[in-house]
Length: 316
Image (cartoon, rainbow, N blue to C red):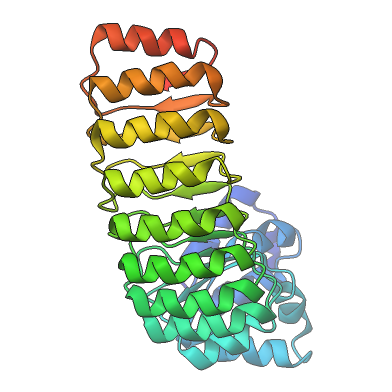
C-alpha cells in the first residue's frame, strides 16, 4: 500500500482503524503516515515501528538532520521498533539516536547481535526481544559483553540456540546487569548451564526466570534450588525439563526460604513423592500460584495440594 495523499481523511478515522492501516504500509510510507497523522500521533508512537535495510538509511538521515521536522519529531518519541535483517552499521547508527524502550529483532545472526551488543551501552533500551533468532553461543557471548553497561531490564532469548556455553557467558554478566526478567527457554542449556546460572543468581537482580525446555535434569534443578533462598526471584518456570521427584524434593526444601510467588512445573516428570514434598512445603512459602499440569496426580495428592494452598491457584 502506498502512502495516502488525503491526510485529512485519515485524521478523521478511529484510532483502532489507524492501527490496522499502519500495519499494511510499506516501511517508508509508514514513517510518513505516522509522522503526519497529528490526531493519532501519541497512539502511533506506541506502536512498533518496523525498520529494515530498505528504510534504515532514510531514517538515519532523518535523525541526523532537522530538515524533515515532522519525521524527526515523530521518530524522537517512538517507544518500540522491530529491527528486521538489519546490517551491523545501520544498527549502531539507529540505536545511538533513537530514544527507545523496547526493541524486537528478527533475522539476526551472530554478527548482527555483536553490533547490537556494542550499541547497547549507548542506548536507553529497557526491553530487548531476540527470540527465535539463530545466533548461538557466539551471539550470547557478545551480548554478555554489552549487558553490564546497558539499561536492559527485560531480555528474551527464547529459542536462540545459545546452549550451555552461551548460558554460562550470560551468567557471568548477570550480576553486573540490570536484568530483572530473563527468558532462556528452549535453548538446551542443560544442567551445566543451569549450574552456571545458579552460581550467578544470588548477586543478580533477576526476579523472573524462564528456563523451560532446556534439558535440565535433577542435578541442575538442585543447583538452582540451593541458590533460590539467596535470590530475588519471584517467578520461576522450569517446565518441560525432566528432573523427576529428586529435583522436586530439592525445590521443596528451598522454597520456604525463597521469594518465589509463582512456580511453573509443567510436564517435568514429577511423581507422587515429589508432589507430596512440594505440598508439604507450600504452607511455609510465599507461593500464590503453582502449575503442575502434565503430571498424573493421584486424587489424594491433589487433595493434599489443595489443602496446602487454600488461598492460592493450583493448575494440575
